[in-house]
Image (cartoon, rainbow, N blue to C red; front, side, top):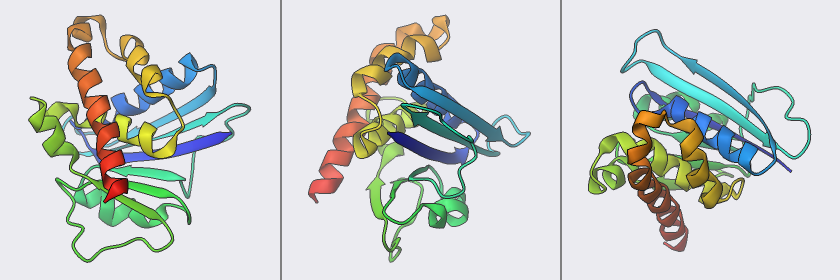
Length: 184
């Protein structure tokens, strides 16, 4: 199997950490992975995006023109990248920051998840990336949630390991939100 995902948002949302976490989780599952980060020169607020390709065999190029899944964390990223999701793919959208009124993606599954609100409800908006990772794993089936949780030890610096329980809650909340969105 081969899975690819494109994450897009702005600096400070943890887009690159999310890609890094997915990569470590794939390695934990014995899969091959490529991770391709890209970001603006600003530390916070500039564009941030990454592509992760997960495969049982060769990953091929980390550059994906039409991803199977996109995770869109803000309005600018929606405006710029939502249409690039391939037909039959999935677009996970942070409906806390993206106005989806009257919008659709023909031939693609659109899952509106209030990622910022979920993170705020858990106590810290900075966990929006963990909510997104849980949502991605649940929506795509590319990774097991347990692999994501285990990979937190590798993706987070040791000084932040005390935050792992909170991040696990955010991953679970993101996955639960996908199940709820698909039932609706």
